[in-house]
Image 1: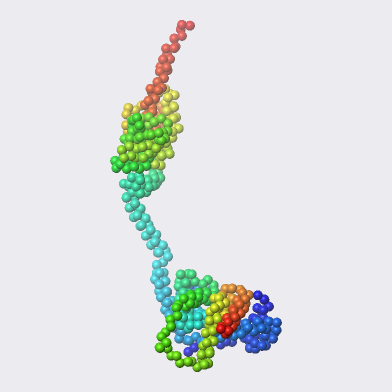
Image 2 (image 1 turned 120 degrees about the horizontal axis):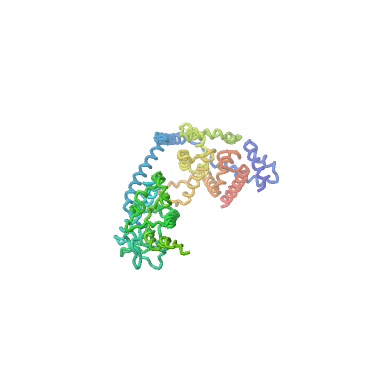
Length: 337
Length: 198
C-alpha cells in the first residue's frame, strides 16, 4: 500500500472535517484524485451510517440497572469480608486439622488389624515405622521392635490360618529342620530349588524369611538367610553389629573358655531370649554398670551383649574341643635327658 | 430528551488516553465504588451503544449489548479479571465480541415470512422508500466487510475518533489504523458499487 496515498487520504479527510470542499482537497493530489474521490465518497457514506442521537431514557435506565448490580455486588463482598483473612485462615486450618486427626485416627484404628495384602496394611506399617522413628528411649525402642517382630510372625500365622496366599516377610528362630525346609518360630518354611538360601542355616539361628503363604499352612520361601541389620526397619529387633559378635566369639575361643551354651533354643522371640543374661538386653542403658565388670577379662568387655540367640555356639564345643591344651603337662617330663 | 452529538465536537483534536485518570477509574471500579461505575457509565456507555448500533443497525439489540458489556465489566472487576490500564479499549473489545456473536446468530436465524394478509402493503412515499432502500444497501455493504474493517469505520466515522484514539481503542498502531481505514473505505466503495449495479 502506497504511503503517500495513505497520507493523502488522511489529509483530505482532515481538511473536509475542517470545512474544505471535496474538490478543493482533491485538487491537491491530481495524480490520485480519482482513487481518493471514491474513498472520500465512501467516507461520507460511513459517516452517515449512524447519526441518530441516544435517547436519554436509555441512558438513565441502563445506569439504574448497573448501579443496582453494583450495590448487590458490594453487599456480597461486604458479607465475604466480615470474616477477616486471619480468621478465615484459622477456620480453614482448624477444619483441616480436625479432618486429618479424625480421619487419621480412624485410618490407624481400621488398619491395626490389617494383614499383609490388605489395602490398609501399608498405613499400619507406616505408622509402626513412624512410631519407631519417634521413640528415642533405647529401652522403649527395643521393646517396640520386639513387639513388631512378634507381630510379623502373628500376621503370617493369621494368613496361614485363613489359607490366604500373600507375600510375607518375617524374621524368626530356626527351631528344627525338615527334609524340605525349616520350622521358623513355629512357621513351617518350605524351600525349593528357586529359593535363595544365603549360607548355612542351622537350628537355633535367626533368619529372615521372605516368601509366599500357601493354603497348606506353609510358607514357600523365596529367600532365607541369617538375619541382618538391614531388616531392623521391618520391625525386626536391632541386633548388635555382626563385627562385634565375631569379636566376642573370637575372644572367647582365643581365651580357651568354654563357649556359652544353651540347652533349648526354642524361644521364638528374640526379645524374650535371655541368652547372655536377661539384664543385658538393655545394656545400652546400663553402660555404667558394664564398666565395673572390666576386670573379668575380654569377654566381659563386650559393650553390648548380644540379644540375638546364638545357637551356633552350642555346637562349637563339639567342633573345637582343643583337648591338646589339657595334655601339655604330659610333655614336660624332660628329665630323661 | 435526547443527547445531541455535535459533529464538530466529534472531530475535535484528540485527547490522548490519560493513563493516570484511567488508573484512578479502575481502582474505583475494583473497589465497587458506585460513583466510579456511574462515571464510567456516563463516559463510555454512549460510545459503546453507538459502536454496537453502528455495526448492528438495530437499536434494541445494541442497547442490550451495551448494557451487557457493563455487566461483564462488573463481573470482571469483582473476580479481578478486569482491564489493567485501558478501560475504553477493554469495553470496546468486549462490545466487538458481543456484536460479532450477535451477527453470527442473526445470519443463522431463518427468516420467517409473515402472512401477507396481515401486512400493510400500501406503498411508502417515494422519498422514504428510496432512503430506506439506500440505508439497506449501505448496511448490507458494511456487513460484508471484515470485523476489523467495520470496527475502524465505526470508530473513525461513527464515533469521530481520531487516528490516535482509534489506535488506542483498538490497541493497534496508528499506521495500521491508516491502512485499515484505507482498506475499509475501498471495500465499502466496492461493495456499494456492486450493490448499485445489481
